[in-house]
Length: 532
Image 1 (cartoon, rainbow, N blue to C red):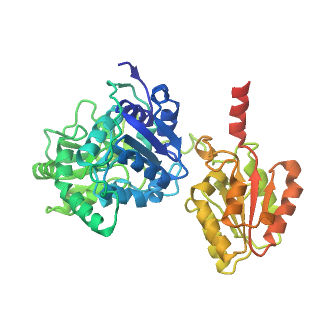
Image 2: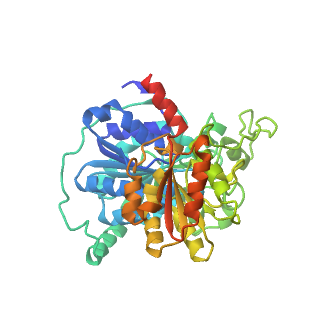
Image 3: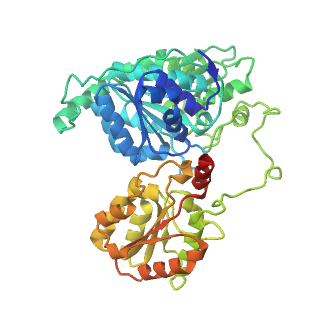
């Protein structure tokens, strides 16, 4: 098969297609977005009619993938790490129901928080759910992985988590494709009760899941993602997880002098870990994200002082790893290829709204409408408009998680801060804002919700917004009075009108919704180019 040079995300996506994928579900979120984007545009996916669609949120995406697995087909769901928080309920419970057709839950973590509000390690979720976790170290492994992981899922009838990180997701390498295999035939579970998680069934399924743990450890021992490499110098043994293995190899292109245990599958291959510990004087753990493996080693029956990594300061506790940090941990000179960039070489360039962005006009109107009130009453959400916190707008006061703007504004109103304003995007509103608005309507909270409708999920590349064309109906269906659902057009020439509408609704002693609708400037440019 021909070689090609994909992103890690694209390699995984093509591997899934070649491994008989029947359904792909996702909600866009960096650094995972390209997985679905690739599959949506792939000619072979279109030819085979692979089901591929953006979902309203990560929870609905995982539930749909679980339903396809129930029907015997191979399904995959992808999200970023904070998206797994949203999908945690079906994720944990899917470990109990198990899978019928192979089910892969792909989670892309974002160490260093390049485009995220926190830094978390999704391997912790996999351990919490008692399911196998696989972690490629390079693009070729990312491509090969779905073939293996789908088989693993079907062998034990459990979901399998695939953990990626930003650097692997968004870097390219040439890979070689293998032969594609056909999709599974439709086949329902032999036991139709196992997906009914009533207590009697759940107890049985939990006992089964716990009983599989020794099998999962054995699978990790013989996985193609796991390898024990001997070395001549036993003063140090190295555990290298996922992409950290590449960083180690960059520092020893001719071969590492120390024994190395490459880990790409969990639960930990305990016998190989014990061998490394017994044969070497000290252990260095290289892992991207949280010190998960390092912390587990400290529970083993040997001297904790011999373990080095993120917990003892040998490596930084937060942020991405890179070859320079690994070199320092090994006591090596970083050489000419250093990731340290002098501050005077690259000037700081803070993010900003695009020139012509409709959100800027909305914030200018909001700031003027709020002039009679004290500051600190605008609750924002996750999206491009979060940049309204920066100059020249200085317009928002919170950004916590998807959908939190409306519920936080409600809580502040409950505390007596009135009026309050929630700023939320059209895609974020349908993702997780609707239920918060329902709470506000039921309590008749004195708050104004501004839905910034730019007709796209713009921050992640302009994917379709799930509620496109239906926002007014959704808001009215939740219970907001029609006379307090207002539509404005965020343009400079409409500024005075928009300020007047906002002031009227801020004065309303109840729930009001203002929909500020104008197409994202970037998607409008692309649409015009494609039409010409």
